[in-house]
Image 1: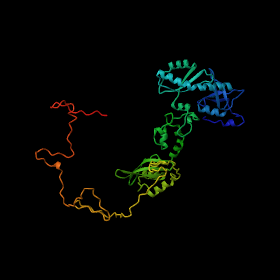
Image 2: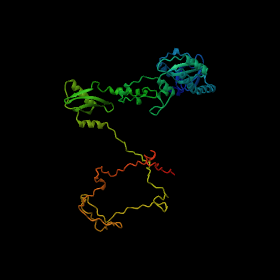
Image 3: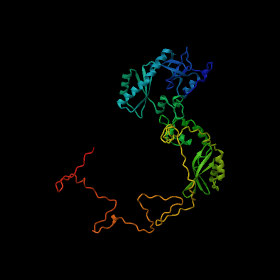
Image 4: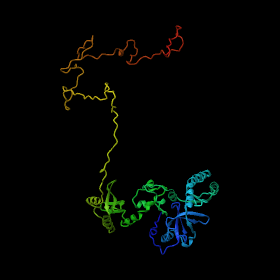
Length: 459
C-alpha cells in the first residue's frame, strides 16, 4: 500500500467526502477507481464486487473519502471519468471462487511460457491474473522490442478457454508483481508500498559519494535501486553550501586539485605535488577553501594551504571511536591432535594397560657444555685420531689386527685404473660389461650346433 487511510479510524463522517473509492486487486498489483454504492457504502478493507463493463471482479477497498481526491490528482484522473459502479459487498462464495482462480494462476503461467517458447517469441511471461468471474485472464510479459503475438493469443484462448488480454510491463513492474527480499533484508519497496516509479541514474550515486559498482547499485530487476532517490534531496541541500568552482586552488608552492568531498565532515581533499612525480593528499575544511578561493580571485596567493597541526585537529574533530576488537567471541573450534593415541591402544604400551608411558630423555651430566665462542679444533687427516680420556677404544674384530699409525702414508691406487701394458683402454670402475646372453638367445644355433640354454618357466 502506498497510502494509509487514517480518516477511516474515526467514527465521524467526512463532510467534504466523495463517493469515489479506490480498489486494490491481487494485493495491490493493480488499483482502479469506482463509484461507491449509495445505499450500502463500503468501508476501507472491505471486499466488494464491481462491474468492469463486460463482467464482474472482486477487489479490496484501499481508500475512501478525501484521500481519494488526492490520488485522483496525483494520477491526473478527473472525477467525471470514473463511471464504473460497485455492485455489492462480496460474500463467502465470491471469495471462495476468487481463491480458486488465484491457485490456477501459477500453473497457467508455466503453460503460457511453454507455448511462447514453442513459437520462438523473444518475450517472457511474468505473471497471470484471472478476473473474479473466471472469464478473462491478463498475461503480463516483458520484452525488449515489439512482439507479434497474434498467433499466441489464439493458442492461449484455445488452451485456457478464457478471454485473453496481453499487457507489456517493465522490469521494475515485474519485480513488483513477483516480489522478493532486497539487500537491506526487507521486502521490496515496489511490491509493498511503492506504486509510481521514478527514473534513477548514476548521478544519484555520484552526489552521495558512492562507488559506481553495477552489482551493488542494481536491484533484483537489473535496474538501479529506487532507494538511491530517497536521500538524494538531503545530499543536494548539503552540497549547496559547497562552492562549485574550487576544483583547482593556487598557493605560492603550486596548485592543488580537488579529489573528493566529505559532505558530513565538511572537508575537501586536495592532491598537492610535493616533489617531481610525487603527490600527497591534504584535507582542508570548507571555510579554508572559501578563503583561499577569495584570495585567488583578488590575485593573491597564500603562503601555505594550511598548517599540518590544524589539519590533524580538524580531522580528529569529526573522528569516531574505533570499537573493532573490543568484544571478541571465544573460538570453540578445537584442533584435532593427530598424534593423540586412543585409550587402550598397546602401540607403545605392550602390556595393554591403556596408560601411556612417557619417558623423559636424561641429559648427560658428564658432558661439558661447549661455549658458543669456543671453536672446535680441526682434525688433521695426517694425524692419528685421539680418543677422549676415560673412554675405551673401540675393540677390533676377531682375527683383525689394528692398523699401524702411518702419518704420511701414500694414497693407494685402484688396480683397475692402472694402465694396461697391451695398449687397451683402462677399465672404468663401476661400469659393468653388458650381458648379451638374452640378446643372443633366439639367434639360432651356435657354430658348434648347440642351442642356447632356455630359462626355466616361472613358477
